[in-house]
Image 1 (cartoon, one colour):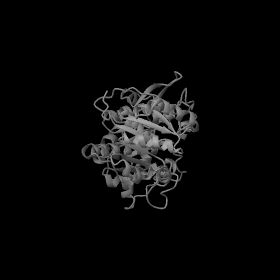
Image 2 (tube, one colour; image 1 turned 120 degrees about the vertical axis):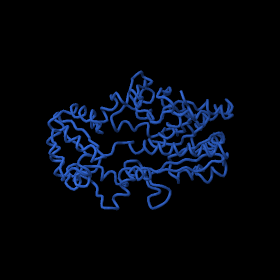
Image 3 (cartoon, helix red, strand yellow; image 1 turned 135 degrees about the vertical axis):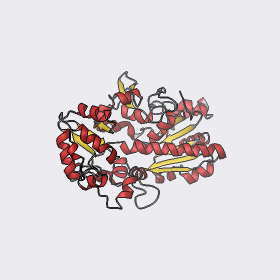
Image 4 (cartoon, helix red, strand yellow; image 1 turned 90 degrees about the vertical axis):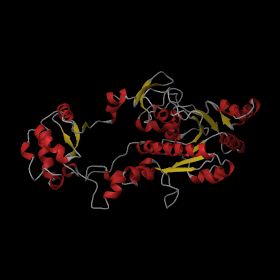
Length: 403
């Protein structure tokens, strides 16, 4: 088991998906991640109910576990000055502080970058927010549905032309943004190791969405128009096609002159190798006509037949799957992109795993997401608090254990 961040301590003051997902990635890579929550817990604990997933913390909570596994739990009342002192003592010993709280809330708690950098110059201060630190939307609530999907253009443009906007899948943009922030934190850890100094690391859901659509940011300035229709796609052979069994395949021929003649022969249509379709530019110019012809050819075959035929010819293609297909997909299972996870009540769910592997694809042990304050006493003892003080804090409600 390769854990390159072993020995790194991360204080995780995040909620919902993007921030927790960042810390989960760092925990998978070996960091000691301490999840700090208020007594009522991260509201992300109840997120799965929106998608009919179970949300019973002491038994089974697969959505919450996905983003909060491999962490320890500390519950502090940050509105109590003694709770803030506990947080400060924790940060003295930490390498990284990561938060998805809005900047205004962090300032009110004295946990903003300027305050913490002055007190703990070694500390990496990392934040994920909706829209960035500047501009008219900087203080807006920024879930991935609004910041990643709606504002970026993805919601309107990643659909078949003349249909409604995408109804975005919850957490999709969050999980992508979490990967970027975890990478930025690792770059800052390298700098910290060289110099002993921390720094501010920032990412927003909007910035991630814009980078994810970086090709479109360039091309739409040069007459490229979205949304598109498969009936007049950018390329007739970078497109989806319906098969005889009602299933769909996606064909992706990027080298038109090389592979289009091969496709014509496979489909029994050598007549299509003519001046109207044979070059990239001519095929693009005549895309609607060519797509209509190819539609009539692909519908003669089942999805399995198309995939076998194209794969043997080394033409890039894939079945168009549903999310519900992927957790049963042999490719995902054999690479440990999805794996069985046993919840506290013994129920087994196949959960997506964080994407980056080191040296091999073996699974690191996955510890269930902590209950609220599950490890509060242990963590306070580690940073020097006596049993008497911890008991007093428990009685007062400054900390909570295993609520």
